[in-house]
Length: 472
Ligand code: TRP
Image (cartoon, rainbow, N blue to C red):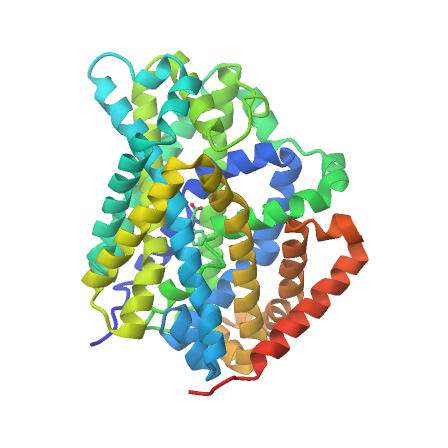
């Protein structure tokens, strides 16, 4: 059976941008920002996107395009060691964990979309009256579970249709729609009274907040940077495994990162002016996953034509969420197809059934939901990317450099060696360090000892994995 490939280069770029742009930009970002010190968080996060995100993205691309396999097979085949295959298998666990909570949030969004859309013809959406109470009533329980199943079903339908007819075609339609609607909303938000206060809040830069909280926000900021670029779960390995031509990976990777960051910023230019125009202060609306829903819904209810604007907004978010959730489902699906020769149909059906259950657990239990959506995902993505990059630097080595350069321009090629050094040494150390801060190690034993532990742990991880248990 021949493996599917993207029909066009643009198709690949849009699919990857579609994966990157999602609830991470629109919902998780404001929530994490509010929880982790506001503007300081933004600055650290942007720095990590640039210095870790882009080289990391290229690391995943190099693995995928070289191996033309999803993570498990890719790591195993390129190394000749089953142990690395087991490391790759973590991405399947990560993909399922991600989709389990993501689909619940996607369900909330669809609910708000339908609620708003139905009210356009007359009346006003139920969540206008008391946004906080409304969200509390629908965010967990039977309703949340049912909408989660609806969102998951839509995701499954797209993945079911395959790489070209499902993912590529779907994102080719969804991404332009997201960009146009979002730009329209941002332009409209600028006309709202007090929009300037929103811009000031969003773009304000206060260095002292960073210096005081740097290590506390490092972990969450790194987690969010990886999350927004879809790194650490093998999504980008899987997507690049469907590339059949050698085009410039550095170019594509930079384009994807720039587009994703732009969408994040434009979203901020919609959300923050809107909140401030209605006197809602994002740091005061309370933290937690509901912040966006409660704050924005409150703002929409005050606006002229608020129902229409709300419908447009939730439509954008639904499309952005779907183009991301398909990339999560594709990880375990591609694994089953590549490794066990299961048909795409059966792989999608089986995995959807599994996530229907795990997602329902998240839908019923806010405690589990919060744990999966926050710390668990942060840790899995950070550890996952560290492993991928150690692999690129130490197992692939020259081969990685060759793949990095294939199809790249002269300028990009000259960045190959510094890039390999970064992904092989600097970034894994950084990622292991942030992993330790997640567990509070730095506050317990201090900064330099933590760096020491990070060095030893990275070296041990590498040495342990370098010796193949059994070579296939
Ligand atoms: N990046 C997406 C967002 O911001 C979420 C996402 C899709 C993702 N696929 C992923 C995150 C893989 C981590 C890994 O909404």
